[in-house]
Structure formats: C-alpha cells, structure tokens
Amino acid sequence: MHSSALFLIEFGAVLLGLGLLGRLAGRLQFSPIPLYLLAGLAFGEGGLLPLGASEEFVAIGAEIGVILLLLMLGLEYTASDLVSNLKTQYPAGLVDAALNALPGAVMALLLGWGPVAAVVLAGVTWISSSGVIAKVLGDLGRLGNRETPVILSILVLEDLAMAVYLPIITALLAGVSVAAGSVTLAIALGVAGLVLFLAVRYGRVISRFVSSDDPEKLLLVVLGLTLLVAGLAQQLQVSAAVGAFLVGIALSGEVAEGAHNLLSPLRDLFAAVFFVFFGLHTDPASIPPVLLPALALAVVTACTKIATGYWAAKRAGISAKGRWRAGGTLVARGEFSIVIAGLAVTAGIEPSLGPLATAYVLILVILGPLTARYTQPLAMRLTARRRPAAAARAEAADAADAAVAARTAEAAREAVDQHRR
Image 1 (tube, one colour):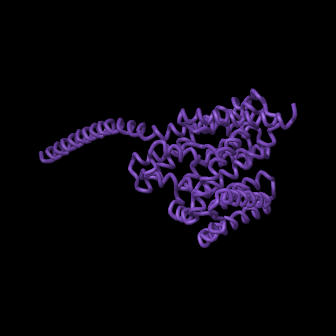
Image 2 (cartoon, one colour):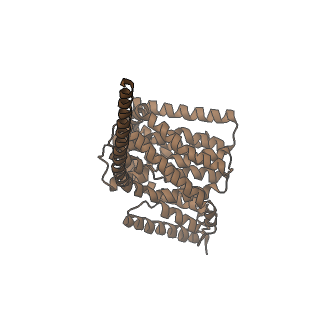
C-alpha cells in the first residue's frame, strides 16, 4: 500500500478512535485523559495495533499539543492576576510544593533512579490537572463556592511555577553544566519577568496589535506568534511550553477571549494526540512492575493534596466543609504530569519513569473526580462519629477527675482531723 494512503488510514483511525473515546468519557462523566493514554498503549510497541507510517506526524502533533495546552493556560490569566496571586497566596504555593513534590523525589531516590529523575518525578507528583479540576468544578456546580478562589489560586501558582521549573528540567535532561544551566534559568526568569512587566504595562497595546475582527486572521496571527515564540524559546533551551505560556499571559481582553474560543478545538485535538503519543512510547508490559510504587505514590500524594487544600482554605477563613472540598478537588493529576514525564521519556533518562508516570496519572485522573465529590461528606461523617466518642471520653475523664478530687479532699479532711486530735 502507498505510504501516503497508509498514513491517512492510520491517522484517520486514530482520530476516529479518540473521538469515540471522548464521547464515551462524556457519557460516563469523567476525564477522557485515561482513555487517551490507554489508546496510546494499544497503538504503541507491544500494543494491539502498532502504528507505522503516521508515528512521525503524531510526534509533531504531540509537540503542538503541549504548546497549545500552555498557550490556553496563559490565556486564562492576566498578568495582574498572576502578580496578585503571587503576593497573597505564595505561602499556599510553598506548602503545596513541599508536600507534593517531596514524595515523588523520595520515591525516585528509593527506586535508585538518581537525582535528575528525582527532580522530574517531583514535578509529576506536584502539579495538579487544571483541565480536570476546572471540569469537575463545573460539573459539581461549585464555581461560586467560597473555597473555589483558593483552589484556583493554587493552580495559578503551580502554573506560574512551571515557567521556572520547565527550564530547569530542560537543562538537567540536556546534561548541561551547572554554569550553562544557571544561564538557562537566568534567561527563563528574565524573559518571564519581562513578559509580565510588558503585559502589565502594555498589555492593551500588545492585544490591540494582535486583534482582528476576522476570526481567520486572528487565529493565524495568534497561532503563528505562539509557534514562533515557542521555537525561539526552545532554541534558547528555555522550553517551548514556557514560551507559549508567556504568549498567553501577554494577551488579554477581547483578544484573549476570541483566541480562546478559536483555539479550543485545536487544543483538544492536539492534546489528545499528545496523550496518545506518550502512550505510544510506553510498553504495556512495563507497567505491571511499577504498578505497586505508582499506587503507593498515588495514595500518599492524594493525601498530601487534600492536606494542602485544607490548609490553604483554613488560612483563607473557609469553613470545615469548604476546606475538605478544596482538598479533595486538588487531587487529580493529568496533562502537565504527562508533559513533564514526556520530557524525561524523550531524553531517555530512566526507562521505568514513563510507565510509572502513566500508571500514576491513570490512577489519580480517575480518583480525582471521586475525591472531589466524596472527601467532604466522608470527612464530615468521620468527624461526626468522633465527636460523640470524644465527648464520652471527656465525660469519663471529668468523672475520673472528680473522683480523684473527691478522694483527695477526703484524705485532706482526714489529715486535718488527725492533726486536730
């Protein structure tokens, strides 16, 4: 069969399959990410139907998917929002990083994978899935809840931290020296700071330059600018994803809204291709050996995310119910955990890291919507059971104290009477 015909058949079958899987996920009311990953496992080496002619195109589509994911994320925020969140919510961001990155780093070191893999796995376990969480909040009707701004603030800080974290990972995976890595990080921080400054001071001017009443021209300009900046960022060893994120931040107002509406279908298409591509590079036979560590890591980091949300909501003065809801909502991991793991898989630093990340994300992207829904009622039920028990223990302790006090008083009276005699 002609190679171009084979490519069209393969790639068409992949897209059709993804569409059907997305429809199935919609009916089941959960994220399609695990189904896309499973599809990648099925089409990859060791799977049921390995791809051939279309794999190179899928690789390019996956790279575009990462760029569009970060661009759309940047469009969600204005520079002033990021600066405001950084000033007011940074303690929650620090707690989030400490509680959720540390388990991943420790697991990598316990498995003997070395410090570079430890930094990568720390990022995998640290970053929550903004896409899954946003969908869950909408599905559960919690967008107007008091704890929702706290959740969104933590997600914003995580996304902003990616602008620093991704260049570090890129430098480590490239094996550059400490001096070269420091230069790369300095460039990334300088560019990020410059973009934030320009977006705050001249955001309207930039948006006016990009703006167009014609949807076709707006799409071409925004997409072309994003790919250009992403390519330049990658050439500077900063990370294409960070470049796309900064372009999204620089755009605001009607331009950001219009670009968001136009690019959403493209984002969904290429993001699905990205998840398939990640699955293609994971041998299904390599998952069972790392399933137990992935499960242990999922349990630990689910608990640490709940603790993070609870602490942040308590700090913001939210009631106990809202604290538990905030914690349960943050559990889901997804697209950015796979983005980080994908960088490591491409660099080939540790063969087992990709399978472990796949299993870890599969577990938490399914568990996340469940914890968002049931953490608060379960916690309230458990605390309600503890209160009567605690009250009974307190009454028993009070009774014991009263008995001791009575015996002490009686002994004191007897001693006084004896002394009088």
